Every structure is written in C-alpha cells, then in structure tokens.
Amino acid sequence: MTVSLNLSEISAIKAELLTLLDQLRTEANNEFQHQIEPQSQGVHDSAEEAEAVVDLMINVETLSRHDEEIAECVTALKRIETGDFGFCTDCSEEIELSRLKACPTASRCIRCQSAHEAVLQKSA
Image (cartoon, rainbow, N blue to C red):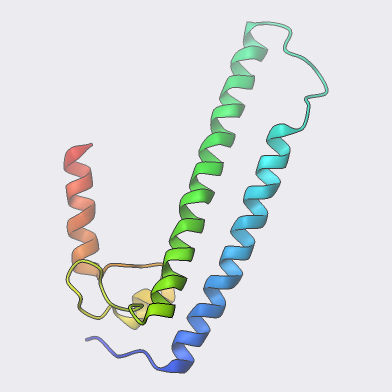
C-alpha cells in the first residue's frame, strides 16, 4: 500500500540526501587525493607493477561508484524540487515510504525496479 509523502517526510529525506551527498563527495575527494599522491616507492618488478595496476583499477572503480551515487543523490534532490519525488519514473505510481526510507535515491517502485534488474541480468 502506498502512502503520500507529507512535507515532514520529504524534508527528512531531503536532509538525509544532502548529508549523504556531502559524505559521498568527501569520500570521492579523499579517494581522488589518495590516487594522485606520488607513491613513496617506485615499481621495482613485475609483481609490484601488477599490484600497482590492481590498486589503480580498484581506485578507479571506487571513484566510479562514488560518481554514480552522487548522481543518484543529485537526481533525487531534483525530483524533490520538481515535485516528482516519491513517484516511479517508469509507471508513475507512488513509491512505498518504507522503500524511500531504506533507499532515498530510489526512482522506481519495487515492481519496476525488479523488472529493470531482470532486463539487466538478461543482457549481461
């Protein structure tokens, strides 16, 4: 059963999104700063080179994940501002409050999110 969001609930979710956005930006900045810091020791052999490449790939993936999460927060905040927050972007039905509390960046209802994930799994 869906329940329309009241202003207090929207304000609480917006505050949570802003806090999350600030946290993600800080984490991404710290990860980026760590990545560009010069390494104290150079690569001496192929094993160290392989380890350095793996570390770089992990850092790039972490930055990419932060970027996606930041984009989701910004998009959710825009939906709040336009009055579209809490409605599924696929079917336009209300998203359950419990889902929004668990995942404030959710843009789809459970049914549409499940269908979306099923399509992604088939294409993978």
